[in-house]
Image (cartoon, rainbow, N blue to C red; front, side):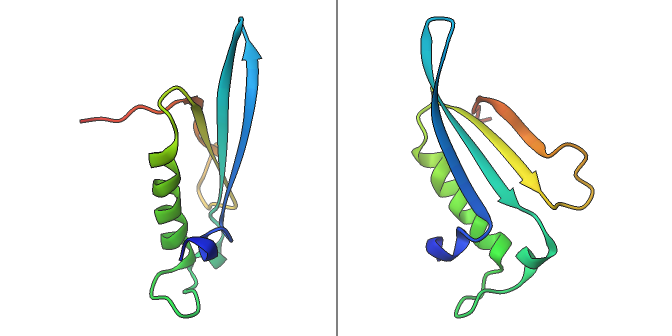
Length: 93
């Protein structure tokens, strides 16, 4: 299922040097177009459900010091494609 989810989820990583410190940066690009509602062959999940599951797996593997951003394209009603601007991931209780 993870392999198929890559249809709608792309992870871009890079190392940036700023203010005397190297920082890992990861930008996740998520397809939110209408085709993501389609079911995948051989699976019960939609493409979007699979992409969300893959996203959660990716986030579990990213160190706390890494800056992460989520960029969504083709989503209806999305005013700013940067759903989560590049920065540290914080989790609530």
